[in-house]
Length: 473
Image (cartoon, rainbow, N blue to C red; front, side, top):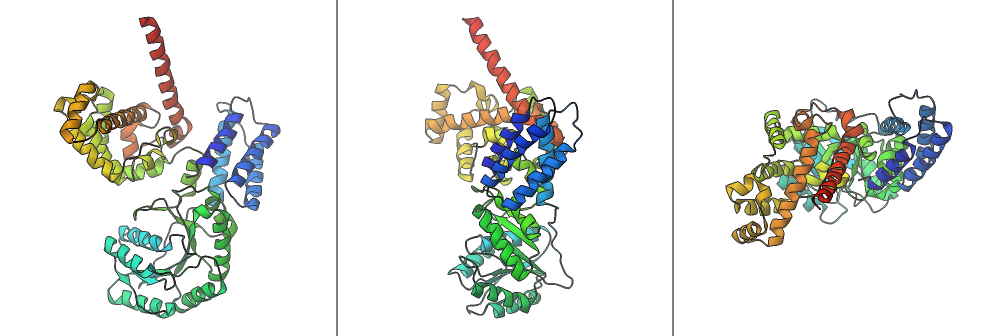
């Protein structure tokens, strides 16, 4: 997500580093590059123009702190302007009493509307609500069956009828919600491949008949500027209450996330960041700005970590890392928790300066089972002291678990990379693992220097190793 935009922003800030002070000339140069980066990310032209103007005014009016370099000052300015552009935060869902509260989802076909309906229903359950999903997409083949299947997976009721009257299905679904004591109705409506009068007339008729309390537009972020244009048209016809951006985990250039609020005036409520049904996140402009600028998202990481780790367990882990006694049993335990947090790659992307280095370290559910088999073939000493595992021990372990030697070697490599990353995190400027998992993290310190410290330490280690080799010779 936003990798290309992040790289271009970082190049701009790097070009400013080392300069004594901010001047109109280097601000102009920086903004020219920022403008190109945003246009390449498919951000609306008028939004880009106003954004660069605001950044320039903020930079010229900023009192430069002597202890900071111009590049760091510009990071702060651009971060603030990005946050303002996408904000303010508005993730509230307004519930009525007595219920049910009716939430209508609209959008083009292929944007992930039906899956988003299920994700939103699951989110509502986590908030203590009892939702009913209404299958009102009567145009797309198998849409009803898809929603019913998703409902069964989540154990959330679904109302459907085998008729072609969308208004009647919506009305009957809301009545059914009252009968079974559901306090929220999630209405999945029909979409088309493009906006047409027939589609909008049907949506308008459904909206006027059932008067939903909130209407959310579901947009595919990967369509970039097209998502913003469709949002504008839907808003003119339906008067939207918010937008849900889907597929932000894919090859999204970021244009929709940066443009849709400015163009429509409607807040981004949620973002879809994966295919699984628990990958709907509340949208926080400040956190998204931090991700775009390559600073990670420590707050979201803390929230996810707090759900899986307790502070006492994190403190024990940090002590083990300090003593160098972190072994395979600890590793497996952490992998199980990381899997519940969305996977290693997703977690690493939230770390400032670390995600790009180790972003390919992804472990799926099948890999966890494979790891367990390999680890259980190790002796107790090998699990506690992984560095003693040599070639002969690897062959014995592979034979014992029925895996290829390559699988064993791959696990050991993954373990060592994870251990190095966690050791760097434990010793870095982020309050340690205990601080991370307890929420006592110095976010600004992590954003400003965490990644660089990790790189600097690893670089110093390489220099020391080279010097040691020369002395031995």
